[in-house]
Picture 1 (cartoon, rainbow, N blue to C red):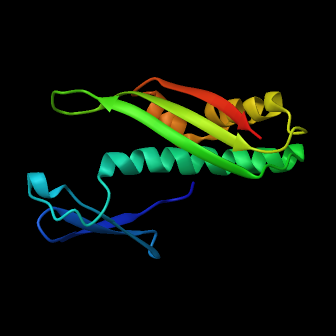
Picture 2 (cartoon, rainbow, N blue to C red):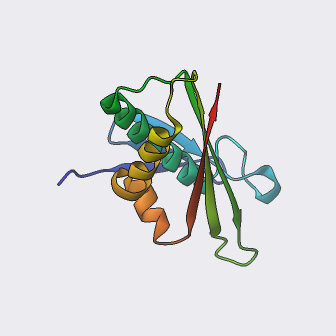
Length: 141
């Protein structure tokens, strides 16, 4: 089993500099409105970023296996959170916008997204235990 280690060190008022597995650095912070210095993204934004990164990597790998070439992929994660503490995401909706020519089969793109969301993406699997995740697939030419 692979071990993951992230170490956080306080910087400024509410910011944290994180070292991920000893070689990548990331900073999170709170907004100035609540006492932070706005030096980086909010932690919950990083959850969505992790979800996009995980599913995006899966999809590109699946498409490579399917021998499908696309020009571009944009993934939007849209959510709302509860008003009361702890403020958690009520739902997450993912919009997968593929760009490709007319030969790209949208049904195969939908299948790649489905496989990522239902079988391969560990971030999606973890988040889905806490909140519903829905998605849509768009192909633009």
